Image 1 (spheres, rainbow, N blue to C red):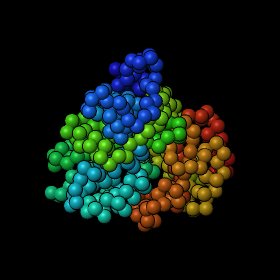
Image 2: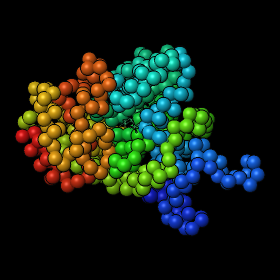
Image 3: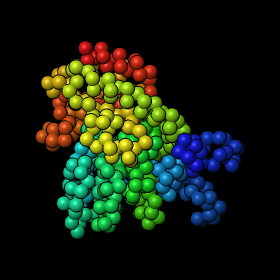
Image 4: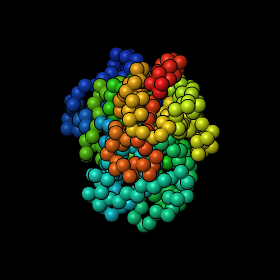
Length: 380
Ligand SMILES: *Cc1c(COP(=O)(O)O)cnc(C)c1O
């Protein structure tokens, strides 16, 4: 099956065996009757499994060309499950400009339990090797990264991980499986905030993991069940519905993203534009190799780098909504320094380019002329 067909049919039965419903029903139940102790139809309690969640998990696995999918109550709950594979004393090497919430989870929660995190620039993947020692157990990659749109070479990371027998996990939230499939490039774990492009309608918070290896899947499934950060059946239904239009939404996100990136790059008040599709992007060539297109996430800075200017621009936008999050059908704008990345100390964030005037756009699927007019008036 090709990708667009998979979004609609991947991992799904075509009709529900009970009544022939075309969409998987929402099994809003906590428990399942048993004829004799242990005599059930595959489900005993909804923390360990629910048929609506199982349908979504199969769909997620199919989209990422993986064997196993696991859905969690949020993207961070999915990341939390991955780090719980580790033990005190273990070390993780991660992208330095990663999602602020991931940074906070690593620094403020897991460091307390004796896990060490090295935050490094991975635009040149060979640098990873300098940080590997006997305790290194995981490489955590986010590409495109948030909010600087850095591109990291997944295949290069994978060969380093394989050489040293370390797990490679890729946060694929920004790209979505439409644009890139990290398992095919050698990653061991793919993670999504399904809140973003997979759900696609800004109406649900959810996370996902997809893996190929059976042993790894069992360990993660055990953590999902034992720690209990699961999602409810109604939310699974919403994400399944979102996934069915992922391919057409992504196509439009990419088209609109391109038009807006080109427009911003030529605007007199704009200093820098970060979008992997621009030939001026430092890792444009790698983006071309590992991504199908370049997505709808764009960051830019205004000339003079003044916080007041950036805040005025985001306040003046009318069609773009000032809000955290991304990946929905509607266009959003954010100011990372005071919003998504406020939990990262100023010195740390500025080192990675998250300066005071940086604005991040999640370009939606509206008419692009309206989006450009909105940006023009707000910058004016
Ligand atoms: C939003 C996001 C997360 C966290 O996901 P939640 O669903 O908000 O918990 C992790 N990584 C990236 C890249 C994100 O954008």
